[in-house]
Length: 221
Image 1 (cartoon, helix red, strand yellow):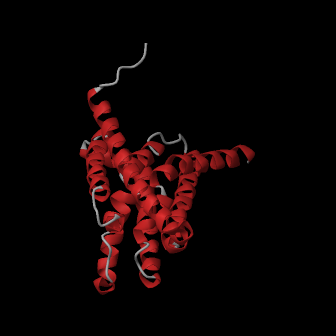
Image 2: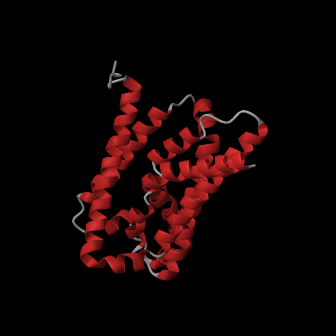
Image 3: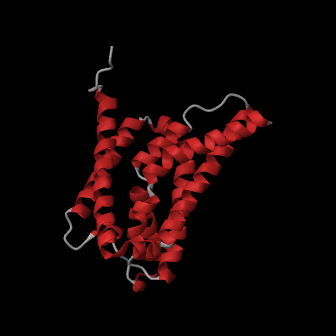
């Protein structure tokens, strides 16, 4: 029983340690700061739910889906890295400010418009991008042998991803309070820094994909 509990804890911590830095919910908090509480609450809930579904689907079924379509993880990294780079650069180069990153939704956009923006671009690719998806696929790429170990590992992955999604909800839901504590200068720095980090992540994801496809980096003897 203790070994089983230790395996669950280790798997949960592995999922958290691998996914949380890439998802970076605190860095995404400014993307909902310009919305009112009546808009931010459902948006945060939708982004958290979409993030959970994307991550859990990638972990449990991602490897099988890629095999079915004859795709590789490096190909996903190259395509996703280009997309993330384009978004990060457009935000960093935008003189209006990084609030445009969220493509601010006016109140008259309605629930449908809010829900659409919750998935794109807030969830995919800004919160759960190709980096997070490829990591999630990697987590589930080597399933345990046996029904019980497989079930326990899947449960631990689900629990870890629930915690990641909960952090996304809290940071997005209470973005105004977080940014209020930072102040205008701190908020501006955080927004610009988040955009730059997003660009760097895109470049790294793109390079990882290209390197895996063409074997540019030679292994050390």
